Each structure stands twice: as C-alpha cells, then as structure tokens.
Image 1 (tube, rainbow, N blue to C red):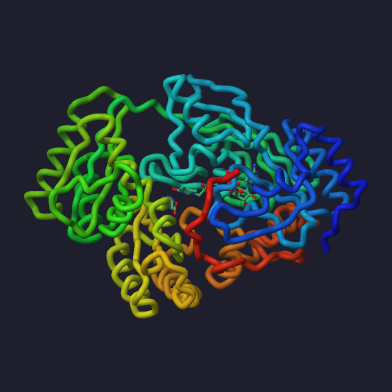
Image 2: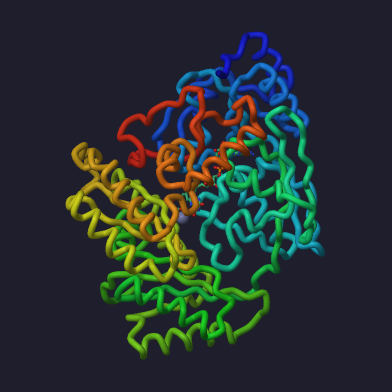
Length: 498
Ligand code: FAD
Ligand code: MLT
Ligand code: ZN
C-alpha cells in the first residue's frame, strides 16, 4: 500500500526544490490535475519543479523511503491520462519543465544531449541552428517535452524515414525509483555490453523512473523537400502508391499520411484560412513528402515522374506538388489540423491502432463496417500515418451535440475496433501509449507472458510501486475512473496544455 504524504515529508520536499520549484496553491496546481483531453481529473497536495537531476534524485529518495506515489509530467499533451495524478490526492506531481537545458550539441557525432523538460520544438531548433535535423515531429511539438516524448515513445509524421522516438535515442540519464541515478548518457552508436537498459525506460510512461536527460541522434538537415497532396480513390490505391514510390527508388520518402474526405471537410469548415485545393471531390488523399540533404532538383523530377506514372496507371486521381514554402505549409496544415478540427466538430471516440501496411485497406473496410453497424449515426474519421501502418480510427458525434446515446456505445466500439486489430495481429496503441486509458485493455490484448515480464521488470525497478501508480499496469493505489463521457471520448472543449 502506498502512503499519504505527511506534513513533514511535504516540507522536506519543498525544501529540496526551494520556493521557485514549489506549486501548492490551487490555481497553480489546477493545470496539472486534468489531462489534455479532459478525460481524467486528479488531485495532489504538491507540484514540484526540480531544476537539476540531483533534486529529482532527492525527491525520489524521500518518496521511496516514505512509500509515497510520484507522477512525472512533461508538457501534459499525452492522450492517455498518463501524467494525471489519481483522485486519491496522495501522489506528488513532478514537473520536468525547469529541467530544460541543452547540455551539449556535438555536430560531428550527430548528437544532442538535452534535459527532459526541453520542449521538442526547442530541441529541433537547436539542432537546426547547427545545420542538423532532430527528426521527431508531432502536432504538439510546441508544448510536449523530450522526457514525455521518450516516455510515450512518440511517433508522428517522420517515422517512415527516421523511426519512433525510441529509434532516436543514443543514451539516457534516469533517476530510479529509489533515487539512484542511472547515467547512461552515451553518444555511442555501438555498445553491446549486455541488456539494453535504455529501452526499458523509453515507452514506460514514467512507471519505472524519471528520465532527466537524453542524448539524441541527429541527421543531416534536409535542403530539398518535395511535398505533394495526392487524391486517391481508396486506401488500397494509397498503399499501392507507397509501394510505387519505394520501388521507384525513392528512399527519400519521409512522410506518407492518409487523409479521408471527411477530415479535409472538417478542416475546411473549422480551421480559418483552409480550403479544398482540388477542383473535384475525392474520397481519400495522401500527404507525402520526400527530403534530401542535397540541393537536388531531380528529387522533384523523380516524385513528379512517379506521380505522373501513377496518374497514367489510374492509381492516383489527381496530384498537387507544393511549389513554394507557403503551399507546403498549407498542405501540412491540412493534415496537422485534423485533430483540432475534430475537437471543434464535437466529441469523438478515438482509437490509435496499427496493423501491417498491406493489411490496412481490408482493416479499414472491415472496421468501418463494424462501426457503422454499432453506431450508424457516428461519423468515421479514419486518418493517419499510413506509411507506418498506423491509423487514428476515430468516430465523431453526428453533429457536435452532446449525444449521450452515441457515447453509450463507446465500449462496444472500442471492443469492435480492438478485437479486429487483434485478428490482424495489430496493436491497440500504435503511438499514444497506455496510461490510464488503455490499462485495462492491455490485460486483454497483451500476451500473458509479455505481461508477466512487464510486471517482473516493474517489481525489479520499482519494488515499492511509487512510480506513476495505476498507469500502464494495475497498482494497489487508487486510480480514478474517467469523468464525463468516459474512456476514449474527447470533449469539444479540450484545451491547450499548461
Ligand atoms: P506528458 O503528457 O506530460 O506525459 C506523458 C507520459 O510520460 C506520462 O505518463 C508521464 O508521466 C510520462 N512522463 C513525462 N515526462 C517524463 C519524464 N521526464 N520521465 C518519465 N516519465 C515522464 N503523439 C504521437 O505519438 N504522435 C503524434 O503525431 C501526436 N500528435 C499529437 C498532436 C496533438 C495536437 C496533441 C495534443 C498530441 C499529440 N500526440 C502525438 C500526443 C502527445 O503529444 C505525445 O504523447 C507526447 O510525446 C507527450 O509528451 P508530453 O511532454 O506532453 O508528455
Ligand atoms: C496525429 O497524428 O495527428 C495525432 O497523433 C492524433 C491526434 O492528435 O489525435
Ligand atoms: Zn498520430
């Protein structure tokens, strides 16, 4: 059992970080008590904002000794309630936002060492200033933090070329649950010295320790980018186009995102300045981008040529190449504004699934049919990272109204989509993690042996169970049930992170 913090412990914790690192007034704590999607509400007596690894270590040593739960928080943009404390009110929130220095940038080693609270966009800018690319790219990059990105193993729109957050890490500094510091901040690309400890903490969502810094892989800064918006008849054409582009030698492909007509319409309807760039209406679109570190015109030629061939073969219905930066930004905005447009359109029931790319067309067709059968009034908004086999399989309310009868079908819809994912040997969380939202689903969908190993790792690294209790794996400590519309349902009023 975890304990409630005593007044003495709270004072000791305050002392560790000093007045500048303490938030204990209701109005200051409030943003940390609710997740980005407003699905969960929790309570805490104290938010600590340490500004050094040593302070994080002292906090965890004390909490470990007192058996008091600790919830790490980054930019609080996560989708699964992972950074929200439980409603019991006994867990200490540790915000990494002051631990945000860029410690070292080594252009020759193509490596950047930054602290966990560094905002993703700041890390990208620091790399760019040194003519390097840090390729992790998410719609939330102006608010989310590196520690949160690594703890959720974030994906985004450049996974096709550069991989998930996990693939971009060379080394980590982590404070273990008992306060010991695991200093594995190496810039090595080759290091076969036993178990890969780094990978344990990536994607652990704060349940095994607190990441305080990371050494990240950089890449050559792209000097040429070719961006196109392509209209296709169906997802199968998009999958075929991807194969076409790859077999035509385009290993420069960085992004390949599927957009349904309804998403384009929602963006045009709800986001200022957006409109349909095509003359005709098409059922599906692909945003694709290829990039190269060289200044080369032939990349544009190569992509145009392949698209022309795809048009001639009737694989593609129409295609627009971005001819300048503002067109490129417009195409990107059409894709990146989809989540915002969806929120403005009303609540939605979300799924974040992956199957193998070749299975995507059949999966989409079967999944859509299942959802239509359960909730014919729902609006299917299925979009995402087709190039990675990853889809946001969302169902919106009919017209933005409250529709309790629609949200009452949430559990049936979740089961239908997740069961179908299982039949395709897919994943019920492609990139957003587990947190509180999918914790109970994990038990259903993860292999029993894999779960046993996860529990053994948790027991070994956090024997007191103080790290982010009730997230990813069930814990003894209280965990709240979702408020309002419940698990997987977005509110139209979801707001910016703290
Ligand atoms: P938080 O939400 O603060 O925390 C997430 C989890 O990590 C929690 O469990 C928390 O306890 C833990 N944590 C945070 N910091 C640490 C630390 N230093 N040490 C240990 N544990 C820690 N996600 C994608 O994968 N792909 C997308 O394309 C994408 N697009 C998005 C677009 C928008 C508009 C929004 C709002 C979100 C999007 N997300 C996306 C989700 C979200 O931004 C990512 O999951 C992101 O990585 C979370 O980072 P954060 O700093 O906000 O973490
Ligand atoms: C995206 O790809 O846009 C996000 O991961 C999904 C979302 O923000 O809902
Ligand atoms: Zn996504």
